[in-house]
Every structure is written in C-alpha cells, then in structure tokens.
Length: 192
Image (cartoon, rainbow, N blue to C red; front, side, top):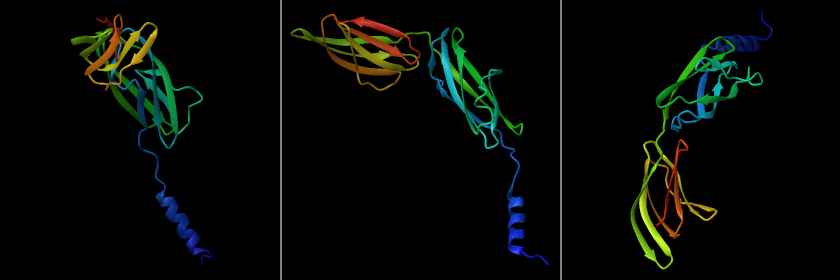
C-alpha cells in the first residue's frame, strides 16, 4: 500500500507532461531590416536567437557569429559585420542550433541601393529675403530624411519615411536641401 498516493500521482503526471525539445530555435535579424543597404559598404548586422534549451550556435551565410559569452543562453544576441556586394538583391541565410541539436533557419532578403534620392523642386516663391520651396524627394527604396542646411546649421524636416515624400520649406538664399535614403546615399540641391 502506498503511503502518499497523491504525491505519487503528481510525480507520474509531471513525468508524463515533460516533453523533449524537438522545436528548432527561432532566429531573427534586428538590423538591417531588409531595407536599403548601400552596395560595397560594410555594415553591422544585429540579431537574436531563442530556444528554451539554450542556443549553442548561430551562423550567417555559413560563418559562426555567436560570441562565446552568448552560448547556452535561451535568448542569445549576436552581432557581425556584413560586406554588401555590388548591387541588386541578396539573401542572408541565418542558421541557429540549440543544445539538443535542433536547427532553425531564416532567410532575410536585402535590397542593395546604389542610387541616391532625387530632389524635385516644383515651385519656388520669393518673399523678401526668404524663399518658399515646394517639391518632393523620390527614391527607389525609401527616403530616410530631408534636411535644410543654412550655414553650419542643419534643420531636419518632419517627413514620413516613404519612397516619395512631399516637402515645403521656407529658407534664405543659399540654403541647401539634403536628402538621404535608407541606404545612406545622399543628394543635395542649393536654393534658389
């Protein structure tokens, strides 16, 4: 006769609930997010891998990128330098392995953007010593920011991050409009 039947039942129940880890680790990239990357440039890529058993390896395009201090952690972070090829679309293959030997992978497409954004001035109105400038900035991927440079001061315009953004600015003569795309390509235009 058992002295503690509820305790034995609980142990048998918990043993039945314990399942082996058969799921692959999850892996993801935080930066870059697959947007524009300037070709030929070296950039820092950052990401994470997660698995309840602990992450023991993360590879990017076949090269180990997990530091020794992150090995075995449930949520492991990694960072590596990525050299972007000349142009076009490329795919980054991320592979992660957990302590039980399960492997997961994720393919991240990157768009290599060599073209600078284009500043299109549609209308310029003069009022005294100031100019009102109306136009748009276009890019094949995404416009990151538009800034007005007056002397040594830079004043950013509050615009959305889209492939085409409309702008208006009131600037003195000699001011320069600067546009930067998501890949870091730049273009400028002097006013008037």
